[in-house]
Structures are given as structure tokens and as C-alpha cells.
Amino acid sequence: MNHRFQQRRFSRPPTVPDADVGREVEVEVTAYAHGGHCVARHDGRVIFVRHALPGERVRAVVTEGGPKFWRAEAVEVLGDPSPDRVPSAWPEAGPGGVGGGELAHVSVAGQRRWKAAVIREQLQRLAKLDWDVQVESATHAGQGSDGLAYRTRIDLIADDEGRVGMRKHRSHEVIALNSMPLATTEVAALAEAEGVFTRRWHPGQRLELIAPASGSEPVLLVDGIPNRDDRDSVVELVETTKDTFTYRVAADGFWQNHREAPRLLIEAVLDAVGPIADATVLDLYSGAGLFTLPLAAAVGLQGRVIAIEGDACAVRDARRNAQHLPQAEIREGAVAQTLAALPPTATGVEVIVLDPPRAGAGRMVIDRIAARSPARIVYVACDPAALARDIGYLTTHGYTLANLRTFDLFPMTHHVECVALLTPSGG
Image (cartoon, rainbow, N blue to C red; front, side, top):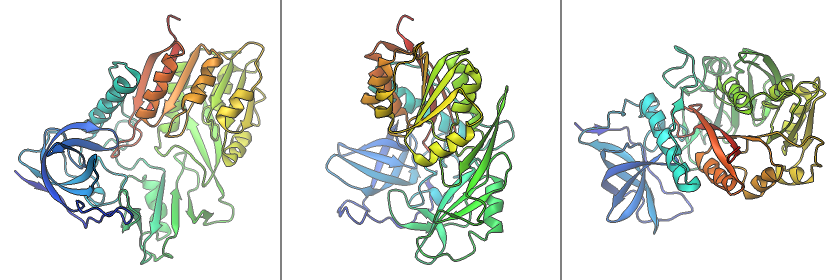
């Protein structure tokens, strides 16, 4: 049985003229690839195909050509579809559609198998490790279990006619939307109250809708300006199994998008660091203090947490959030340089926690982490390739991967969050 998808206009990137764009090919899809693609070959050339699944034969449209590989989007399944294929949960993110929902055609269980396979492959290729990866659900039973309605923050942009939408994958073109199914019900209610999808905005205006999972008042930002003068920040309340932590975060600052992510990540990090009463802990890329506060609670008044963050806005938030914690010290600066300039502590650093951006920490930071000889390194990562590369660097310093947990914090996308524990080899 053939499966045709809603097919939008395909256009080549304006700066990359290519005669192959728009060409149709029939290919056998063989494997998952990092980045939301699958792998196929045509006349000996590798093609990275979106909206496909391994084992399928598809008709695909080339979206980017090149001498080494092509990119393409599957527009029809020829023959039997994969058992993991389902009707798209977000058709607007299908072939020729917006970015941000590239796995919406895959069952939630299939998405997790996809992500686990990618993490395994990255660890094998970049860190020379064989690891049994199991991606954990991030939702309570009955709460967003279909992989939708989980984002507490969404970003939109107005097209040339003033309708809000999102950009097409790997393009500046804006596709107008009437809704965003990954948004929580609270975000959807804010959009309705503000007429976000029905009003006409100035072309190019950027909208960010924020509805904290704690239930505090939502806010709409238009080109970075809140819809109310007193709404330049939001309150995030995170309840773990042991404590409750309160954060005030700039409305346009960074916070985890999945409503359950802060709780899950705090608990996973604390599990990984283990008992740390009276210890000295470094919290690198500390943001608004998501981990700084629970780490400070764990080390107690006789311990010390030194948080390092390069973004000035996040540092202001962190200092405000940790001002009642004398054991927490917030330092502003690039992590590599600030870490190098940090004087030795009397007891040494027992634990280092790091949550770098998508590009990862990199060799310089890893070298400087290892130079501190921590007993435990807890690495929070949103990109498995960067994580695997940095784990590879750490192995050259005598560290080994002791534990790895992975969470499906970005359903319908290829993104996945990992919490890795590394300890000295033989320790």
C-alpha cells in the first residue's frame, strides 16, 4: 500500500544554486542518522532522507545537492511502511514543512528506539564505547504521553503577510500556522487570549510564548518586549522528590522547554553526584542556577558550589536565585578561561557538573576539568555527538563512563537529553 504525504513546495536555499534540487529519486532506506535523517544511497551517493524510516522504500525529493551527499525528503512510501510509522502528529512539520517536528511520523516508542540507536552509534564511533542505551519517558502516565503538549515555551515569527508561523527546515521561508501541537495547554491558552494566530503582525516580528509549568502567570514577548511592563521575568517552581526550588528567570532567558525537564534533570544529576555533604562542587555552564540550587542544598553550609556561566543575563538570574545560599558562588565568564583562573580550593574539587550548549564542552574545557582531578564528572548533554566526542577526550585523561541516562525531553524531534557519569578508571 502506498503512503503519500502532504507535499509542499520545495525550494532550493537561495545561496546554494543546485541543479539537483527538486529531483525525485526512489531509494531504499537503510539506517538512522544523527540529525533526524535516515540513510539511503542512489547511484553510489549517500542521501540523508527526512520523514523516512529504515526498511522503507520511498520516493524522495532532493532538497540540497552536493558532490559528497544529498539531502532529501520522503514524499511517498512505496510498498509496506515501517511498523513504527504512524499518521503524522503534526502534518505541518512534514515534507516541505516547518522544522521542529521531524519525527512526527514515528510512534513515540519508535522515536525512542531511533534516539537510542543514534546515541549508541555516536558512542561507538566517537568514544569507542559499546553501551546499551534506553531512552526514558519524560512524562507521567496520562500527561502528554502521546508526545504532544509538552513545551512551555514556543517561538514564532510573522511572515510577509503578518501571519505567524515557523521557518521551513534549513530555510528562511516562514510557513504560517494556526496552532502548535507541541505547546502545553497553558501556552495554547495564552496564544488564544492574545490572538497570536488570528492577528496580523508586522512582517518579521518574533513572538515567544512562555507559560511556566509551575502555573505562574504566562507572558508573551514580541521582539523581546513583554506584553506587560511587569512581566520581564517568570517564576519557575521545581518540585523534586526531596525539595522544592524556586527560580526567577528572565522572560527571554534560557530555561528547559519540556515541562518535566527541570525536575528530571535535577534528580538525575543528584543521583549521579551521590552524597556530597561538605564537598566542593563546580557547576559549569550553570545558566540561571538550575543545578546550582540543588547542589548547594546537597553540600550544605559547610560545602561550596562554584557556578560558572558566560551569559550576563543568566548570571544575574543565578545570583538572584542563589542569594540566600552563602555556600553558592556565581562567577561570570567564559568557562574555559574562568576555570583556568580559578584558584585551587583547600580540599580540592570532588565533583564537577557541566551542562554545555549543543556544541559541547570541547577539548580545552575537558582538559581543564581533568586537571582538577574530580572524583566524579556529571555531564548533561543535549547533543549525543558532542557528548560522545567529549567522553572520548575524558578517556584519554583516565576517566571512564560509569553510567548513562537518557531522557526523551523533545518528543517529535530528533533531540534527546543525556546525563553521563564519568569516574576515574579503576576508581
